[in-house]
Length: 511
Image (cartoon, rainbow, N blue to C red):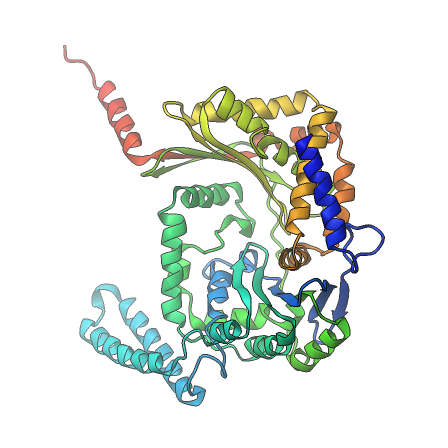
């Protein structure tokens, strides 16, 4: 009863909170759209309770748009967008430009000589590296560090950040409503006159980030290998941060080409939520962004992941406690089965009353963590389970327990009470995500990148239509053995000991 009451209060709060800019149905967003001639889309939602405007510039490009050799370039470019322009981040761009060109020239020469392997001229490399360090010292003296960040902060902005996903790249900024023109001036300059300064050092930063989040992280290593085996053709198979060798060798020339193709106004959307006048916003965007030329439409991903014909398994050795991850192929956003899969995900792992928690953690006590989620993408993606066994139980026991819960969903319809509880949880979570101007801006931009922001307006209606039969149907359809990939992370030392014991047991007895 308490949860139900909390949900009702949340809906009431939501309706009151949104009063003045949502019509008729309190859970329908009244987003105004405007398109510039160069293809830049503007989405606007008024919210006048506080004098703040939350703005997102989202580009419809992510790791899915990359190719072998430059995987990770979208994420690297996210870093580069904060390095300034011809105007920001430099003391004198005219003096800096020749140094940047010289740095590129020396890097190319050093790389070419090192690629000669055993015949490389070490003395020549040392001379070039000394010259390169001298150039970089001059470049460091010419840079105004974090000038864009500092300028924003001095004028009251907050939430300055960016993120990269498989399907999009997102830039965040929340600022006082009287600073909109400052934002337009800075961001239009970043779109027009970006300079890839500190490119090589930032590439090293990304490499360190990869080491921290993937190579030295059991979860990172597990999910990277899981995706690489789950997808054999589609570019969802490679990590957003990129493969190590690609990140190490991405060139500035390749990055510039990627920028021209994908970071054009016709591949971008600006989202504004907050205290502003839409007509004034349109004039401002026209003034600062309309002269940025559009580019040819970027290529779409043509590769379709083939139907999986049988279970795949992969084992990863790592100095860590064991983990297991299981993934199943599911459709893309907009497919009618997605809403029932949302219910399945929440049913299995939403809170301490979820089935995985009650069974694997509290009941059988075979796991210390068990979670399920459906990863909704622009293209068909995955439904994934992640779990960690409780010692001395094994990943095999956890795996078997997960399958037991899946079979229950296939064969026993969930009760009306349990289905309604899950719908209430999903609705409450959905409302919570939209409970601030910042959350609204992020969600509108996110769904616009994936398909259409109107997904938000239809979600509640579609969710209420999900039945117990739908839950059984999608579980039977997607959570099958032939459609799954299993990744198991095992302790490297334990694995070596088991191998040694097996070999010793196979030794022939002496006569």
